[in-house]
Length: 257
Image (tube, rainbow, N blue to C red):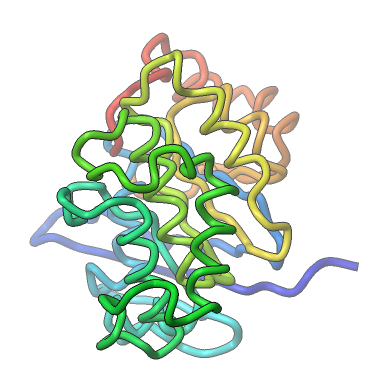
């Protein structure tokens, strides 16, 4: 029996003037999914993610989260309902440490948003949650360093930790290893693999090693439309996918599209 659908794009269309960036996209993310969205440069992946997260408003179609239509909700309303996207690190406070950043996020999630700056020891729930996240994401040793001083791989780990601190049921993991040096990738890959099973994950990634080791299901986007969907074996052996994407020499480390 299939797991229930937690996030669905239903006939999503996005037009910019006369250009159709997203054309009638249907996508289903099931409970506990490890689902990857892949495609060549300019495929429309970023546009689709921006539609799902509320950064862009669709020209047509619906977005359904846990049975509720969220098509017109703002990004922060979607986060409040359990759908979280990993954010770029430059949206954080560079002078904050990982501990301070997580304490702020956890406090806001617990409804203590106005008091996050109080000494951490005053709220044992916040302390315990921060300690658990710091340990889970291998950040304990650097928890007091300013974010701007962290190695890039650690900053990406912090980015995912912040997303998880929001207690998502649906996590959009947006190119987690992009720009991460080879020596820092293994720790990040292992952390991604160990994400909580109850969190449904949609991974957007160009690194095919990560995609094929992580995803149980994959959707291939080309020219703003869904080319095909299937399990990793089906995708790896699909002649159309090989022709338009996997056969290209620039799939590793390519730019997002």
